[in-house]
Length: 264
Image (cartoon, rainbow, N blue to C red; front, side, top):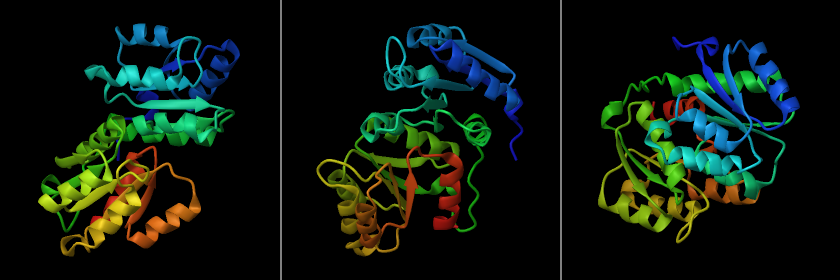
């Protein structure tokens, strides 16, 4: 059980609309968040971060000087904030617009308007980033687990590595696409593969099929992390032999339960 409570969190809200800012602030206060600062632009957020380090940054998607994706990418380039939890609140629903920010790693993407339950779940997810718990497995020493992460997005790979490191998993090998993933799988021994679906060279379905064709890959758990929404494509992935599917963003609580099931 976490020793940190929602009331202990410090938040930075980036919202240009005074009306929306008041609405979100009231929801956060109703959720027992006491330490909240608000700014109205990406530039103001970056300036504020030069002086402070919040536990969570919440932003709307469209800011007057940049998008939330551009803001998050700038933040992730700074070593001080590469682990900063980021939450998006937006009425934007287009896959092509939201997928880059999912790839970069967010705590949650909340719709406008969101419900009290939505914000409560997102804040509780933040606690897993603020105070992570090591994964406890009966059959494995977590510190010796060997994991292969395959994703063409550098931001996504870094986010997945952060979450796994927080769980105590230290031996992580990365590949930028399915073809490189197959090569690395063939040259070493792995206890778990975590892969994206949509990748150049060789996609996640083809990667899973290639691993399953190898004698040493028949029983290795494969967790696919994807924002893919096409049911037919996902069915094909399941038929190829994936062990479990996980939505992006790569959320610690969900991933922990999946790993307990796959490795426990």
